[in-house]
Length: 445
Image (cartoon, rainbow, N blue to C red; front, side, top):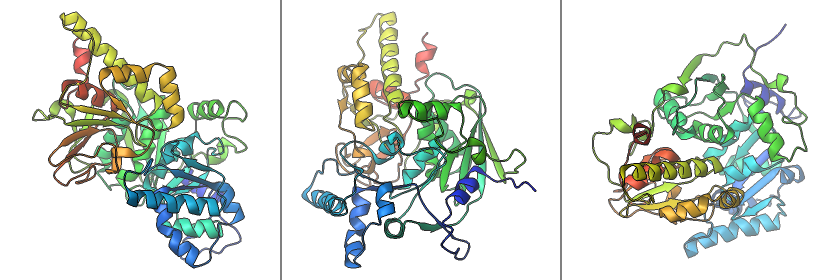
């Protein structure tokens, strides 16, 4: 008798630790990757060492530790946190330790050891980004991570799945951030609480950089994870990432991790990419999402920040430069100064998600074009996203960002305001000096 399960169920079952009994519906799962970053690992160090714990040999091989939040630290207190994290990593001989090389979630998906259909845990809520690789990936707190480091497994239960079906072709200037905002507008913030989103690309051909943005945003719906069904787009990405050394799905068989055709999901959400318009999330509520052209007032911007684990990938850089070229062409057509630059009253900060992306963007000429546009390019890090450093707002200031969250005080004082949009919308708004509809460029053709 055949049983039909979700993708997440199948990865869950394949990750069970047979030698450990289930407890109250929670099974012991062995992760194939344990992601840790400087602030959360540092939090657990004292308890970890007070109890005489050591990172187990098996767990150590699966660790990917990154210094990305305080990168580099902007205060002595944060330098102390970074030191605690690094000293702990060195004492425990963590081999895959990445210092100031990029945001942990981007380094995770660039990691050639991470293959599709893996179970992944991380010390950050946006670990779900690895769902774009068809992995069951979730963020956990310090106690769960500590348990995994010592025992090699954690306890977890199954979650019901919501099917998300994508169709149609996205218009120009629409990217993964707009698609993610569309989904959040349908679920509401927390509307998929304690569920798994399973994404099916029904011919929409969503590219990997956009899939990373979509999976990254799964947690904003309350979902435990957001998994793309494996397909040729994923297989080609993995093969290219790994230099052709491994097949697109490694040693695992895609047919073993495909949801049964006859499986009935409790809920299905259909999204036609062809109907999406540039969107913006309004402060201080991620679920308050509007079409940019429907904003009721002219929202002047003190700052635009493009980066974080939700953005800052190579495709974002290419799209931003395409927008700059189109602005210049439109200016020339109107007889104005052709060279496009940001509004003089709006600061523009752009952060690549990793050093690999930074180097590729430099080779492609994107960095020079953005600097000439008036941008400040920072080193790869979490940076302004969580109000950490390199772009904190002042009292009463307003920022448009491509980053992950916009709750009150996210990027500085409680009186500041944070709007969220896509990279194309953000770069065009930096030019306009206020939140502007990038589709205006299409109207000028």
